[in-house]
Length: 49
Image (cartoon, rainbow, N blue to C red):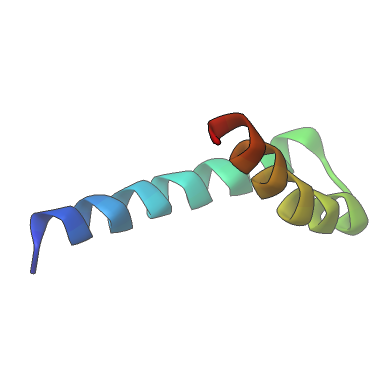
């Protein structure tokens, strides 16, 4: 297995764990969770690009 592939998988797992923690910590309702899934990558892409 390539080291870069493992790094990406690890980063993805850490991001997912952080995302779940944020949802539980903020006590978000289901529609805000869906909105966050859709809107957050858009804003992140605009900030990075």
